Amino acid sequence: MKIAGATALVTGANRGLGRALVSALRQAGCAKVYAAARDIASIPAADGIVPIRLDITNGEQVAAAAARCQDVAILINNAGIARFTPALGAPSVDDARIEMETNYFGTLAMCRAFAPVLGRNGGGALVNILSVVSWFNVPMQGSYSASKAAAWSLTKAARFELRAQGTLVSGVYAGYIDTDMTTGLNAPKSSPDDIAARVIEGIEAGAEDILADARARQVHAELLKDSSAFDAAMQETWDASQRR
Image (cartoon, rainbow, N blue to C red):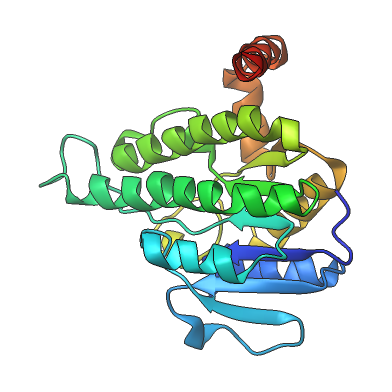
């Protein structure tokens, strides 16, 4: 997909990877970027950047954003949360619940609200920022891994349903990224700017799976086989259901 001249919306745009994505989109020639976040006071003013107050777990705010941003051709679902707690060993299910509400249900709400907008604007691109733990479970962050696995499955579902309207649906996979979310983790981390650059390249190349760093490429090679034939069969199953 061509980014130059397009209008994009990025959630979680006030810091970390979200802020890097906004900058990368503008540098790639995006005409306008809606920078969406709960706290828009921390979004720096700049030409072509329109701050949008948006909590993706708030249905009314999601609907209002879709009604306002009718020119969006690229949606990047970046907003997410991680509590870094085990699934069973956490003192309650509260952390798991908020991770699922944000990482899965919030992303689902954005996909549902903006799919018609993308369709009216020629198809465009829907990009979900996922994680290498979409493919396996890290027990120290068990509930976060589960929420990202759910978001991975959602990304496939959106791809099946939106292919007919010409929407590119991409999942972005990376290991730890050097943001506020991972400040307390002593592990190799990728630069947000590097990940954002890979996302831009992936969108323009029409990639459905964007392996944005070495960790993602390593894990993908180790755990996943080529699923293209299986996915093609699932696509035909969906398409046939729509012809009935």
